[in-house]
Length: 116
Ligand code: 5GP
Image (cartoon, rainbow, N blue to C red; front, side, top):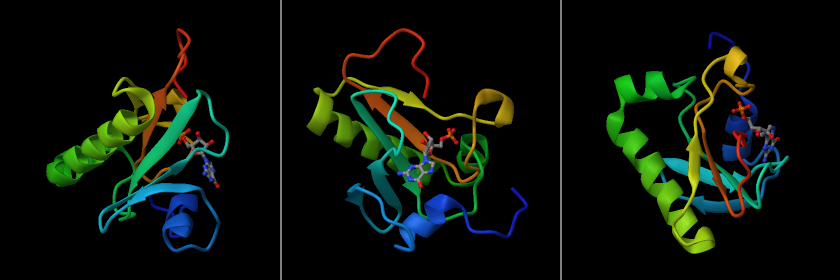
């Protein structure tokens, strides 16, 4: 992503726009998706705006990617018996609309093909 405009998620990290935050530490923030596609639909977002998608994150900082996944697992443990779908949309053609890497945690009575 070459835009210098802060992403909507950077604005949530900075508390410039509101969100229902469910987990946070020094590296990640997790909050309810504004348009949920499943009974549980939480976004786990690295605080750094440096990576547009999961491939960039994996290449540059695999520890941070692992931390995103571990945070997703913890949220699913708390809210959905540990069973969940983890989605990283990558690229416009795949449905990505926010180019600040994020994991969709989807759980609870999922329907076939619910890919956020
Ligand atoms: P993507 O389509 O990029 O994989 O996912 C972006 C997600 O961000 C969408 O599911 C969308 O509903 C969510 N989203 C977009 N803007 C906001 C916002 O301002 N607040 C919250 N909580 N979620 C947002």
